[in-house]
Picture 1 (cartoon, rainbow, N blue to C red):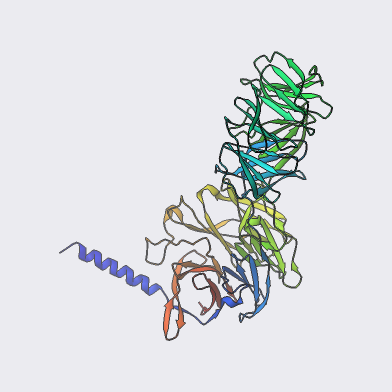
Picture 2: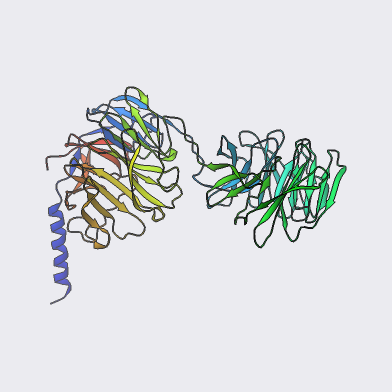
Amino acid sequence: MSWHKPLSGLVLFLCLAAAALAGPDLVCTADLPTSSGPLPDSIPTDVAVAPDGTLAVLYAREGRVGLLRSDGTPRAHRGLPAPEQAPPRLDPISLWVGPWAEPTLLACEAGKRQPEWRLTVRQGVLRAQRLEGAELALPAVAAVGPEGRFYALSGQTLHAFGASGVRQYRVSLGGLTAPRAMALDRQRNVYVLHALGLAVFNPKGSPRFQIDGAQAFDLAADDRLLTVGRDWVRKYATDGRLLVERTWQTSGRQVVAASLTPSGEIFVYQRDPHSGSGRVLRLSPQAEELEEFPQPARFPPGQDPGTRLDSQGRLHLWDPSQAVLQKYHPGGRLESRAGYAPQAAPTGRLLRPADLAWDTDGLLWVADTGNCRLQRLDPQRGWLEPVAVGIRGGVVRGEPRQVAVDGRGAILCVVHPPSGQGQVVLQRRDRRGRMLWQGDLGEASASPIIKLALAQDGSLFLYRSDSRLTVPVLTRLDSRGKTLARVGGEDRNFHLPGQFASRISLKPEEDMIAFKGGVILPVGGRLAFVNSRLEVFDVRAIRHARGATLHTLPDFGGGAVAQGQILYLTDLANGVIHRIPLEAR
């Protein structure tokens, strides 16, 4: 007897058993068409049902929410798309400090090498502006001109940007080696500190002169020039005359930065390249030493935007460990610090919204992912004050990607760090959005897909899949967070009935939908029904009547169940919301 005959019989038996466990197909009885959306081609991505039957439909691409009656007729559309915000993290590559503008940085998006962002200190915070019209590359340095333009020197080309961030013109320079700092005077002459010294060009890019050996320089508001070499200091008048020259012994210290005050005094920062310790010298207008301020050990970061002295002798430097621009009195006192955070859009503006849920007070909560906040919509009064979202013990701004409301009115949300580094967390918040509790869900670096659903008895279902899990994990917890059941992961016991090799994987846009003490999971164009013991007890295909033919539906987004009987499911492929009766189970 051949060995393959009993094996093929076993396979046939398992297939028949799996088919026996699957119930009859579910058939859509009505569609809510895309004409209900804010635009003719709107694609609904999620839906939530209020106790009074109102449907809230999320159109993520348009950044809008539609309020529909249960029959699909529109009540209102709320929200406006928000403009794409700056990246969650920027790495500065060049710092400019001068007399006619706030400190400004040229920056790259984290992990990239293209400098295309300007960071400016405004009200104690670094605000970002994208630079457009130029392909900048490293190395690059930046400056602000007296007329307000922002200048970036990339390679041998100087790019000038207007107030809107759009390039206005460019000028070719030449003969520069590893530029480190730059400034422009009132006649738009360009001063560039590079490996050979200080090179000066006219506005058309022609060389004017060079001061060899300069290691630091400063240009005052009236165009007086200060240059400092390894063992000398020189000060020039606005017409180029040498006013003061002094030589000194530096004892092996490197000159890091220098500045010229309005009264003519000079500040110079020197640092020992081996120990990192240094000093700031205050000199008279004749370059005579008046005061010395010892400095703690400081070593430049790998990507060093530079350390600068301003016209009051304050040190400005970037601290990469805290991602802040710091300003120190030469005596060592920290006077200010400015961190970067993408600026949130106005209330009611949505950027990459990911989820929505009704609370017990009739407010709609929207996970405004791209703006790192939760937004609340009152159907009668409109948008309320947004709730900023951060991660306790982590980043100041976090991305809420799931939101749900329990039977007591508490708000649950899954929050991811925007950078993809750190912990994804589950947060419980009160009805005002104040955080009550937070717990870790896993490392964000594994790119997890995490979904949550709340049962009527208060228990919580958590679904998780990521790049490190062979089989996704589904967990059920009670209202206090105690684990009641768990399937998947290493146990590999989370699969379709009789199909032990199957994998129940949710896409980022799909929902886990609470239903009669369990959940419904979309799986490859079908619905898997899971009970409170986390057993997949039924699988149904969804068919749609088009004329006399039933077509299987392939691609789902979010969904919700109304009154325990009607499933509303968004169809991303066809751009509609399906209304599907669920028979008593």
